[in-house]
Image (cartoon, rainbow over all chains, first blue to last red; front, side):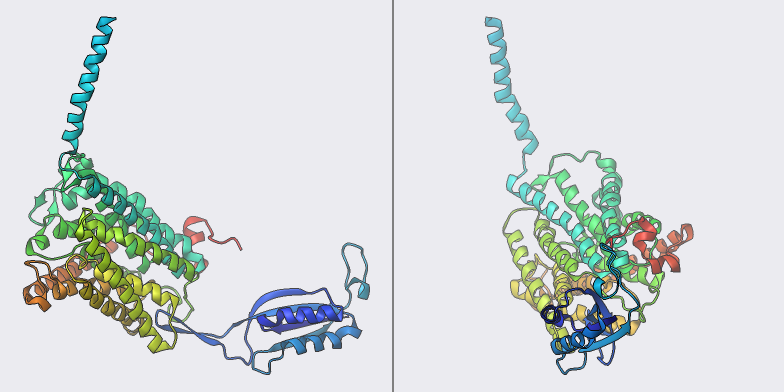
Length: 112
Length: 427
């Protein structure tokens, strides 16, 4: 099993959800986060005083999937999230030792 | 039976003929229309106090919003009591040496429903009370996010007694500025210069907030600021038009001048920041409106609509320049720009009255009477000197009695939790 963490623009969340749903992945955890990378942030002005805002709002999507689905999930995310501009986000993949569905006690791929 | 009938007839006759005489005697000289307007205006000015709480509350960081609102709201308790016990008497009581009123009206002794102009005396007391409550609430914008609440309460009592009441007497209560012919229709000097200058002194005495200039200190809720500004604008119609103390043509003229100057200042502030930073901001629009309201306050009864337009246009640019350039250059931490908007706006308004006034016998410079501008300048200078020195001394006295600032840890944690054991938002 793998955990796929995608940090993306807030505006692409619905497209990613639709794409994953069509692919057959329904479980995910979504959080609103602030982050910075290559994107330079923006300027805010309050009563004439400028503030450089380095951290920008992003959405982090966490999906745990079977190894066989990993590439497919990543493809769906990239397809929905890529605009070609700086700030499209990143995807991180890590190995997961196990997963347990609390309601039934199922483990491993059956639990995700 | 006949006796009972005779008694009822007698009582009825007494009620018909005598009671109306009493009623007539009590209301002789009182105009019901004027009274109704001033009652409504009093309620409108009251609304400015929760308005300022929202206006300021939205501009501070999330951890200090309740403390900021509390500082405005507590004025409704403290100053109400002070005003009715002795403040009104000091401000409007029989004059002592053109400087202060005596204590003839202590505890509102002898202040009843007899007419003052065409309204009941007690109504005039409560209308003026709202001004007394609002003025120190304005100062709080300069000291929020760092002043201890007990120290603020002591400051509030002393400042209202030693600064507001005397200046009010000088300008409106028969004092020396009134005798000199200084024009201040609804409080440019009494309310805005006094609070704006005192705010600057308080900000300097307290020192900058921890992290000022290095940390990001931006408004946590601009919709609060807009709501507060809207309530202030709405209430200001009572503040200015109500100061006519009558439902008449003067009140109508004041109303239109207030609206025109405010709209003009809103636009000039927004245009100035649009030119400088490339975008118009909501906070700027709200701030510009308040700057216009402040500036037109002393002049609103004495100028033409075009005079109001000019006063408003200059006010927006002047106040924007002060908060965005002068404050940054000077490096003082007037948290919410009380000096930049109320102090500078008030000074401009008071001087502009001396430029644009068309009042008969008190025309301004542009209408051939340079002397009026001189008188206005004297009133501005006197208010600056008196309010700044008195505020400095009061803060030193308060500081000697109790600590003025919260400690570093409390400032980092926020004053809501530290001073009130409350949190505005639970998440």
